[in-house]
Length: 140
Image (cartoon, rainbow, N blue to C red; front, side, top):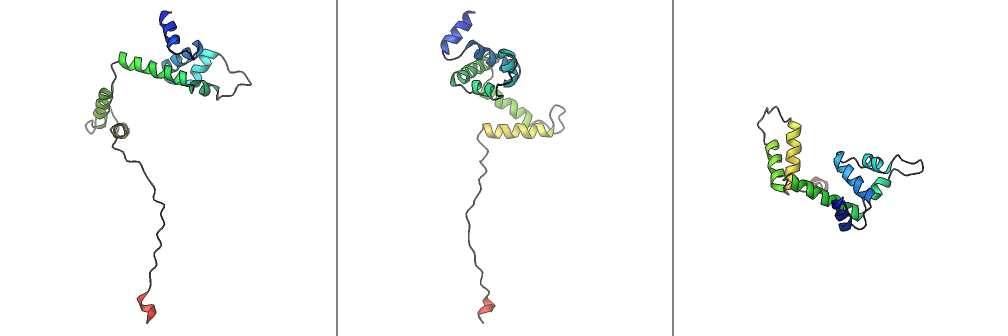
């Protein structure tokens, strides 16, 4: 109970139900709608489906979510170096490795290249260049 009081004191705009919803969101594997209905109860007929997302987007709720994620990462000793190392082990697993499919390896390479800043944004060039070709034989 004491940690709940401290948490709510650090996040004065967050309600107890908001805090419980975020905790459930993390516990259920990041399903926001499911977390919302578990904490707030069944959806009333006149409630819009977007309400869970409006609650989720509140700055104080996002701040609480970031704090909870940080606590989890620290407790699990997850840091950028460890994540990068794990992605690299998947991406560069030997050919024919039974644990990882080619698709797993490609996905790991994509994430790894984004994390390391190796991907270049795809751009489109919409400049129009006019070219006229004159036939040399036409002037004779």
